[in-house]
Amino acid sequence: MSKDWQILKKSFSYPFDAIRKNKREFFIWIVFTVICGQMGIIANIIIRYYSHSIPLDQSIYIEGSSGSFYTFSIALIASALGPMFVTFFSSKLEFKTIKIISIILLIILLQLSGIIYAATQSKDLILPNSNDLTFGLTQPIIYVISIVLVGYTFGVLKLNATAHTDIDDESYIEKEDATVIDQTMATNEVTDDGKGVMI
Image 1 (cartoon, one colour):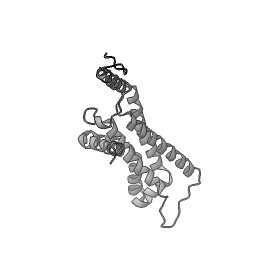
Image 2 (cartoon, one colour; image 1 turned 30 degrees about the vertical axis):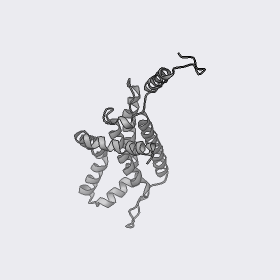
Image 3 (cartoon, one colour; image 1 turned 45 degrees about the vertical axis):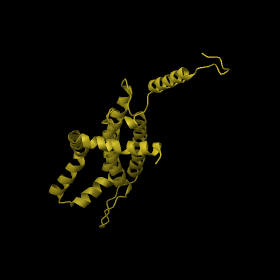
Image 4 (tube, helix red, strand yellow; image 1 turned 60 degrees about the vertical axis):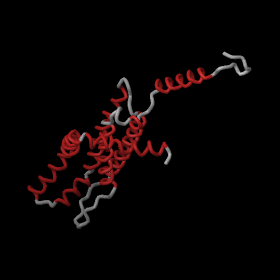
C-alpha cells in the first residue's frame, strides 16, 4: 500500500478516533446540536399526535413535505462551517488539507441542500389522501449525510497535533528548514571542488 493511500486512510479514520477519545464532548454536542436542533420537528410531531391524533408516519411525511429535514440539514452544515473557518485564523494552522477538504464537502452539501429545498418549496404542497406517505429519498439521504459529515468535522476539530502528526501538513517553514538542513549536510560532505582540488 502506498504512503499516500495510508495517509488518506488515516485522514478519514483519525477524526472518528478523535471522537472516540472525546466521547463526553461528542455526546454533549449530539444532544445540543443534533437533538435540540430538531426541537421544532419533534415538537410538531408530538403536538400533532396529542392534539389531532395524527400518526407518527403521517407527521414525518408532513415535516418532509414542508422541507423541515432540508432546513435542519442546512442549519447543521452552516453551524459546522463557522468553527472550521475560525481555525484558519490561528497562529499555527494544523491539518490544513483535511480541513479544506471537509469545508469543500460541507459547502457542496450546503449548496445541494439549498437548491433541492428551494425546488421542493416551489411546488404547490398538496397532501394526498392515499396511504402513500413518501416524500422522496433525497431528503432523508441529505439529512443523514449532513449529520455524519458534521459529526466528522467535530472529530477533525478535535485532532491532536502530537497524536496525529502523520497526517498533519508540513508547514512552509518546516519544509524550508528541512531543505536547509539537507543542503547543509550535502555541503559538509563535499571534500573537493570537482576538479580534484581539496576544499
